[in-house]
Amino acid sequence: MGIATAPSAAVAFFPLDQQLQLTKQSWSPETIQNAVQLGVEIASYEQAAKTFSALTGVALSKSALQRLVQTTGSAVVNAHAAEAQAMVEVPKAEAAVVWRETPKPDSAVMAVSSDGVMVNLIAEGWKEVKVVSISAVGSTVDAESGEVAVNLTHHSYRAGLWDAATFTNQHWAEACRRGIRASQNGGLY
Image (cartoon, rainbow, N blue to C red; front, side, top):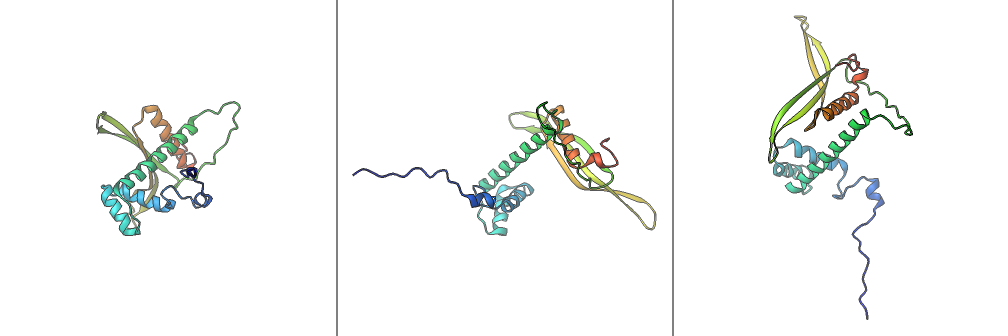
């Protein structure tokens, strides 16, 4: 008699997993989002993993959390790069032009600021991280003195180790995403 073998079941297709948006960790997107949020807000992956496990009852190691944060971060970087490229790319003649709806800004006037900071990377030396910050501008008037206080809310940021041209594209993409063109600034900032 011969030996009977079964084909490999290494790759399987589970339609319900796709419908529920489960990943290879079999966690919901919300569970992954909560784990990643703790991973970026708490300085230690070990402490963040312990906090996540204590809050959810789901076991998570520090190395698994670090992989989740890095995978999620890479996906965000790739999405931002694709968005920035799409915002400045001239369509090819044969491509259909798709007009994007201009998002409504969070306030009539939006604040835009750019900055940079030098960081020392291991084995690479000093590099400049470029940052754009966009915020809604609001104001309050003190009833007694009549003084106007300006406040900034609804902040968003993009930061990266980009050259000037890439930073310009990222800057423009974030400004468009926040509805700058529909604000009183009109895209002139």
